[in-house]
Length: 152
Image 1 (cartoon, rainbow, N blue to C red):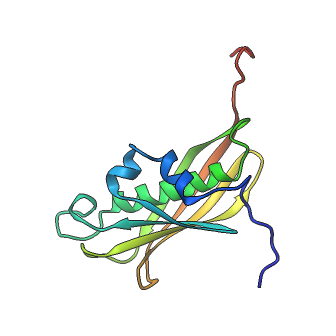
Image 2 (image 1 turned 30 degrees about the horizontal axis):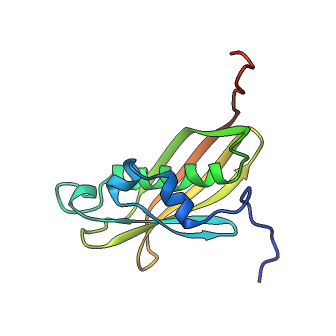
């Protein structure tokens, strides 16, 4: 049993995450947030015609969209969104296993580094059986938000 404190800034629910991503690419691809763990965020993506490549396997771009979604939202959940913003800086990935249509993949984002100016996230995209399909690393920049009337 871990006694580590959760990494999140404030309280979060799966319903809040669904509302934040409503009517976006997340909705279009069918990405669904499934778990907020103390040190990870998990989301599920169906492998269907819209997320597959022509041979019927998960499209690499869909894997990256899942990785970007779960990693960038996790980064936002770690900061005070009233005073700061988390912006994607770099995303890279290796695809290691094909996943056929009719299955789901799970994106699991865990922090490697949570600094004041950057966050680095490892995002594992796994099959429903827990086999690695794609491994990604996302770096986000943490920027102060401009306050109204503060100038440019």
